Length: 201
Image 1 (cartoon, rainbow, N blue to C red):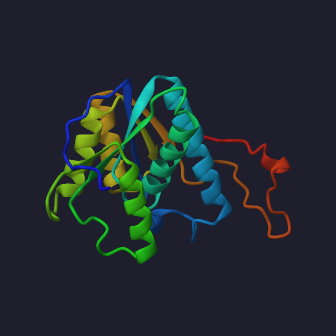
Image 2: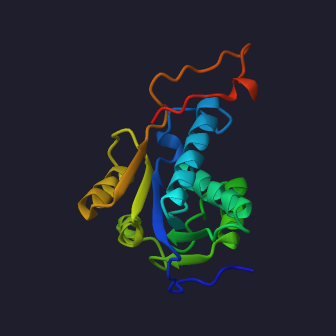
């Protein structure tokens, strides 16, 4: 059953927002790349850290790439902690039909996430040139913390980081590929035992 749109919600604790690059801006060719796997692990570490610092509500702009991975991670953690601590996910859509031009696979993934969100806020009923910026500003308005996948590129993520800095909230920056990262060779794929991967932020 679809989540009703634009219902006012009150956070249980602090609010953490996400921002980050879409796939075209990320330095790996696919989600199966080991560097992408490592980025998801680092996102999970940051989300757990935010929870330990008091975050209970997470707001996400629902774009492809970083937003999708962050939202799925929050939903996974929500299930893990369901009997321990309330964790909620709130979607902020720049416009209704955000996914219309995406692949069928991406649309299914997007709609599965939306169906599990605790609230869905839609900034505009249709696309407008400024609806992405308005979406980002609305998220930062609610947030006490920002987790951003960012390495200095111009665009929406840079502007969102700037908004967070102007508001004075805590900002956690993850470079898409951490310093000192060495891609595994095909003959030396990382295993669970190798899994003492050092997380460089």
